[in-house]
Length: 251
Ligand SMILES: Nc1ncnc2c1ncn2[C@@H]1O[C@H](COP(=O)(O)OP(=O)(O)OP(=O)(O)O)[C@@H](O)[C@H]1O
Image (cartoon, rainbow, N blue to C red):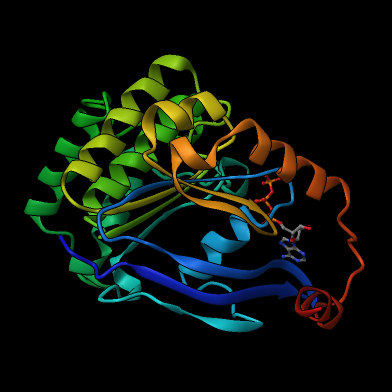
Protein backbone atom coordinates (compact mmCIF):
# COMPACT_ATOMS: atom_id res chain seq x y z
CA UNK A 1 0.00 0.00 0.00
CA UNK A 2 2.35 2.78 -1.20
CA UNK A 3 1.43 6.41 -0.66
CA UNK A 4 4.57 8.08 -2.00
CA UNK A 5 5.17 9.55 1.46
CA UNK A 6 4.10 12.90 2.92
CA UNK A 7 6.59 15.72 2.38
CA UNK A 8 6.55 18.98 4.34
CA UNK A 9 8.36 22.02 3.06
CA UNK A 10 8.80 24.96 5.41
CA UNK A 11 5.31 24.46 6.85
CA UNK A 12 3.91 27.17 9.11
CA UNK A 13 0.39 26.98 10.58
CA UNK A 14 -1.08 29.90 12.50
CA UNK A 15 -4.23 30.92 14.36
CA UNK A 16 -5.03 34.62 14.03
CA UNK A 17 -1.45 35.10 12.82
CA UNK A 18 0.01 33.47 15.98
CA UNK A 19 2.13 30.52 14.83
CA UNK A 20 1.30 27.11 16.30
CA UNK A 21 3.78 25.24 14.06
CA UNK A 22 6.52 26.91 12.14
CA UNK A 23 9.33 26.10 9.72
CA UNK A 24 8.71 22.39 9.64
CA UNK A 25 10.64 20.49 6.98
CA UNK A 26 10.76 16.72 6.60
CA UNK A 27 8.96 13.61 5.40
CA UNK A 28 6.77 10.82 6.68
CA UNK A 29 7.97 7.93 4.51
CA UNK A 30 5.36 5.74 2.87
CA UNK A 31 4.51 2.88 5.26
CA UNK A 32 6.29 4.50 8.21
CA UNK A 33 5.06 4.43 11.81
CA UNK A 34 5.77 7.78 13.48
CA UNK A 35 5.05 9.27 16.89
CA UNK A 36 4.66 13.03 17.25
CA UNK A 37 5.82 14.03 20.72
CA UNK A 38 6.15 17.41 22.44
CA UNK A 39 5.01 19.56 25.35
CA UNK A 40 1.41 20.80 25.72
CA UNK A 41 0.70 23.46 23.12
CA UNK A 42 3.59 22.31 20.88
CA UNK A 43 1.39 22.19 17.78
CA UNK A 44 0.99 18.40 17.54
CA UNK A 45 -2.81 18.34 17.04
CA UNK A 46 -2.56 21.38 14.79
CA UNK A 47 -0.11 19.53 12.54
CA UNK A 48 -2.40 16.47 12.31
CA UNK A 49 -5.33 18.70 11.35
CA UNK A 50 -3.25 20.36 8.64
CA UNK A 51 -2.17 16.95 7.32
CA UNK A 52 -5.83 16.01 6.92
CA UNK A 53 -6.67 19.26 5.09
CA UNK A 54 -8.63 20.66 8.02
CA UNK A 55 -6.43 23.74 8.50
CA UNK A 56 -4.86 26.01 5.88
CA UNK A 57 -1.12 26.66 5.90
CA UNK A 58 0.16 30.17 6.63
CA UNK A 59 3.13 29.32 4.42
CA UNK A 60 5.04 26.37 2.97
CA UNK A 61 3.52 23.29 1.40
CA UNK A 62 2.52 19.71 2.14
CA UNK A 63 2.93 17.19 -0.67
CA UNK A 64 0.78 14.17 0.18
CA UNK A 65 1.98 12.02 -2.73
CA UNK A 66 -0.76 9.66 -3.87
CA UNK A 67 -2.93 10.32 -0.80
CA UNK A 68 -6.29 12.02 -1.49
CA UNK A 69 -8.55 13.25 1.35
CA UNK A 70 -10.69 10.10 1.28
CA UNK A 71 -7.55 7.99 1.90
CA UNK A 72 -7.05 9.58 5.32
CA UNK A 73 -8.39 8.06 8.54
CA UNK A 74 -8.41 10.44 11.51
CA UNK A 75 -8.99 9.77 15.19
CA UNK A 76 -9.46 13.04 17.12
CA UNK A 77 -8.72 13.43 20.82
CA UNK A 78 -11.40 11.76 22.93
CA UNK A 79 -12.30 15.11 24.50
CA UNK A 80 -13.40 16.39 21.08
CA UNK A 81 -16.08 13.71 20.67
CA UNK A 82 -19.61 14.08 22.03
CA UNK A 83 -20.93 10.67 23.06
CA UNK A 84 -24.38 11.79 24.15
CA UNK A 85 -25.65 11.31 20.62
CA UNK A 86 -28.03 8.29 20.74
CA UNK A 87 -26.50 6.04 18.08
CA UNK A 88 -25.36 2.46 18.25
CA UNK A 89 -21.88 0.97 18.14
CA UNK A 90 -22.74 -0.70 14.81
CA UNK A 91 -23.74 2.62 13.23
CA UNK A 92 -20.55 4.33 14.39
CA UNK A 93 -18.40 1.56 12.91
CA UNK A 94 -20.39 1.63 9.65
CA UNK A 95 -19.52 5.33 9.27
CA UNK A 96 -16.09 3.94 8.30
CA UNK A 97 -17.70 2.53 5.14
CA UNK A 98 -18.90 5.92 3.89
CA UNK A 99 -16.50 5.78 0.94
CA UNK A 100 -18.45 2.78 -0.38
CA UNK A 101 -21.94 3.89 0.67
CA UNK A 102 -21.77 7.66 -0.01
CA UNK A 103 -24.18 10.02 1.70
CA UNK A 104 -27.55 8.54 0.80
CA UNK A 105 -27.00 4.95 -0.28
CA UNK A 106 -28.02 1.88 1.66
CA UNK A 107 -25.31 0.07 3.61
CA UNK A 108 -24.42 -3.21 1.88
CA UNK A 109 -24.52 -6.63 3.54
CA UNK A 110 -20.77 -6.77 2.86
CA UNK A 111 -20.16 -3.62 4.92
CA UNK A 112 -22.32 -4.96 7.77
CA UNK A 113 -20.24 -8.16 7.83
CA UNK A 114 -17.02 -6.16 7.72
CA UNK A 115 -18.22 -4.00 10.62
CA UNK A 116 -18.95 -7.17 12.60
CA UNK A 117 -15.46 -8.50 11.84
CA UNK A 118 -13.85 -5.17 12.75
CA UNK A 119 -15.65 -5.16 16.11
CA UNK A 120 -14.47 -8.71 16.79
CA UNK A 121 -10.89 -7.82 16.00
CA UNK A 122 -10.95 -5.07 18.64
CA UNK A 123 -12.50 -7.40 21.22
CA UNK A 124 -16.14 -6.19 21.01
CA UNK A 125 -17.91 -9.13 19.38
CA UNK A 126 -21.70 -8.79 19.43
CA UNK A 127 -21.86 -5.22 20.72
CA UNK A 128 -23.42 -3.72 17.54
CA UNK A 129 -26.71 -2.73 19.21
CA UNK A 130 -25.25 -0.99 22.27
CA UNK A 131 -25.61 2.79 22.47
CA UNK A 132 -22.23 4.51 22.44
CA UNK A 133 -23.12 6.49 25.57
CA UNK A 134 -23.18 3.25 27.58
CA UNK A 135 -19.56 2.31 26.80
CA UNK A 136 -16.49 2.88 28.94
CA UNK A 137 -13.78 5.17 27.53
CA UNK A 138 -11.68 2.15 26.58
CA UNK A 139 -14.59 0.37 24.88
CA UNK A 140 -15.45 3.50 22.93
CA UNK A 141 -11.83 3.83 21.77
CA UNK A 142 -12.04 0.21 20.53
CA UNK A 143 -15.17 1.19 18.55
CA UNK A 144 -13.33 4.11 16.93
CA UNK A 145 -10.45 1.80 15.97
CA UNK A 146 -13.01 -0.60 14.44
CA UNK A 147 -14.36 2.31 12.39
CA UNK A 148 -10.82 3.05 11.16
CA UNK A 149 -10.37 -0.63 10.27
CA UNK A 150 -13.49 -0.44 8.10
CA UNK A 151 -12.30 2.76 6.47
CA UNK A 152 -9.25 0.96 5.09
CA UNK A 153 -7.28 4.23 5.00
CA UNK A 154 -3.78 4.54 3.52
CA UNK A 155 -2.81 7.31 5.94
CA UNK A 156 -3.95 6.99 9.56
CA UNK A 157 -3.69 9.94 11.96
CA UNK A 158 -4.25 9.25 15.67
CA UNK A 159 -4.45 12.10 18.20
CA UNK A 160 -3.53 10.82 21.68
CA UNK A 161 -5.22 7.45 21.07
CA UNK A 162 -4.19 5.94 24.43
CA UNK A 163 -4.75 8.87 26.79
CA UNK A 164 -7.01 7.82 29.71
CA UNK A 165 -7.26 4.30 28.30
CA UNK A 166 -6.56 1.23 30.47
CA UNK A 167 -3.45 -0.91 29.96
CA UNK A 168 -5.30 -3.88 28.46
CA UNK A 169 -7.07 -1.75 25.84
CA UNK A 170 -3.85 0.10 25.04
CA UNK A 171 -2.09 -3.24 24.54
CA UNK A 172 -4.84 -4.49 22.20
CA UNK A 173 -5.03 -1.27 20.19
CA UNK A 174 -1.23 -1.10 19.85
CA UNK A 175 -1.57 -4.51 18.21
CA UNK A 176 -4.00 -2.97 15.67
CA UNK A 177 -1.47 -0.17 15.02
CA UNK A 178 1.26 -2.78 14.41
CA UNK A 179 -1.00 -4.59 11.93
CA UNK A 180 -1.61 -1.35 10.03
CA UNK A 181 2.15 -0.82 9.90
CA UNK A 182 2.73 -4.39 8.67
CA UNK A 183 0.10 -3.78 5.95
CA UNK A 184 2.24 -0.88 4.68
CA UNK A 185 -0.09 1.91 5.78
CA UNK A 186 1.43 5.20 6.94
CA UNK A 187 0.56 5.76 10.60
CA UNK A 188 1.19 8.97 12.56
CA UNK A 189 0.21 9.19 16.24
CA UNK A 190 0.41 12.04 18.73
CA UNK A 191 1.61 10.53 22.01
CA UNK A 192 2.78 11.64 25.45
CA UNK A 193 4.15 8.39 26.89
CA UNK A 194 7.87 8.44 26.13
CA UNK A 195 8.42 4.77 27.04
CA UNK A 196 5.52 3.69 24.82
CA UNK A 197 7.02 5.65 21.92
CA UNK A 198 10.45 4.09 22.45
CA UNK A 199 8.94 0.59 22.58
CA UNK A 200 6.49 0.74 19.66
CA UNK A 201 7.22 3.63 17.29
CA UNK A 202 10.30 3.39 15.06
CA UNK A 203 10.17 7.06 13.97
CA UNK A 204 9.57 10.19 16.04
CA UNK A 205 8.98 13.85 15.31
CA UNK A 206 9.80 15.82 18.45
CA UNK A 207 7.97 19.10 18.10
CA UNK A 208 8.00 22.30 20.13
CA UNK A 209 6.19 24.48 17.59
CA UNK A 210 9.38 24.16 15.58
CA UNK A 211 11.02 20.78 15.05
CA UNK A 212 13.52 19.69 17.71
CA UNK A 213 14.36 16.40 15.98
CA UNK A 214 12.77 14.12 13.38
CA UNK A 215 14.02 10.65 12.51
CA UNK A 216 14.61 7.24 14.09
CA UNK A 217 13.23 7.19 17.64
CA UNK A 218 16.55 6.05 19.11
CA UNK A 219 18.26 9.18 17.86
CA UNK A 220 15.45 11.70 18.40
CA UNK A 221 14.16 10.75 21.85
CA UNK A 222 17.34 11.56 23.75
CA UNK A 223 17.31 13.20 27.18
CA UNK A 224 18.98 16.28 25.63
CA UNK A 225 16.32 16.69 22.97
CA UNK A 226 13.47 16.20 25.45
CA UNK A 227 15.03 18.85 27.68
CA UNK A 228 15.39 21.25 24.72
CA UNK A 229 11.71 20.77 23.89
CA UNK A 230 10.71 21.53 27.47
CA UNK A 231 12.89 24.65 27.63
CA UNK A 232 11.46 25.90 24.34
CA UNK A 233 7.95 25.48 25.75
CA UNK A 234 8.87 27.57 28.80
CA UNK A 235 10.01 30.40 26.51
CA UNK A 236 6.98 30.53 24.21
CA UNK A 237 5.54 33.96 23.66
CA UNK A 238 1.84 33.32 23.05
CA UNK A 239 1.41 36.81 21.64
CA UNK A 240 4.21 36.57 19.05
CA UNK A 241 2.94 37.42 15.59
CA UNK A 242 3.72 35.22 12.66
CA UNK A 243 5.93 37.80 10.88
CA UNK A 244 8.06 38.32 14.00
CA UNK A 245 8.57 34.59 14.35
CA UNK A 246 9.53 34.27 10.70
CA UNK A 247 11.86 37.27 10.94
CA UNK A 248 13.53 35.93 14.09
CA UNK A 249 14.29 32.57 12.57
CA UNK A 250 15.68 34.19 9.43
CA UNK A 251 18.03 36.36 11.53
N1 LIG B 1 -8.71 26.65 17.06
C1 LIG B 1 -7.72 27.34 17.62
N2 LIG B 1 -7.78 28.68 17.70
C2 LIG B 1 -6.77 29.41 18.25
N3 LIG B 1 -5.63 28.85 18.73
C3 LIG B 1 -5.52 27.50 18.68
C4 LIG B 1 -6.56 26.68 18.12
N4 LIG B 1 -6.16 25.37 18.19
C5 LIG B 1 -4.95 25.39 18.77
N5 LIG B 1 -4.56 26.66 19.07
C6 LIG B 1 -3.30 27.06 19.69
O1 LIG B 1 -2.23 26.51 18.94
C7 LIG B 1 -1.19 26.07 19.81
C8 LIG B 1 -0.92 24.58 19.55
O2 LIG B 1 -2.06 23.83 19.97
P1 LIG B 1 -2.18 22.26 19.74
O3 LIG B 1 -3.52 21.85 20.22
O4 LIG B 1 -1.81 21.95 18.35
O5 LIG B 1 -1.03 21.73 20.70
P2 LIG B 1 -0.71 20.22 21.15
O6 LIG B 1 0.77 20.05 20.98
O7 LIG B 1 -1.59 19.27 20.44
O8 LIG B 1 -1.05 20.31 22.70
P3 LIG B 1 -1.61 19.21 23.77
O9 LIG B 1 -0.48 18.25 24.05
O10 LIG B 1 -1.93 20.06 24.96
O11 LIG B 1 -2.83 18.56 23.16
C9 LIG B 1 -1.65 26.37 21.24
O12 LIG B 1 -1.10 27.60 21.64
C10 LIG B 1 -3.17 26.48 21.09
O13 LIG B 1 -3.71 27.35 22.05
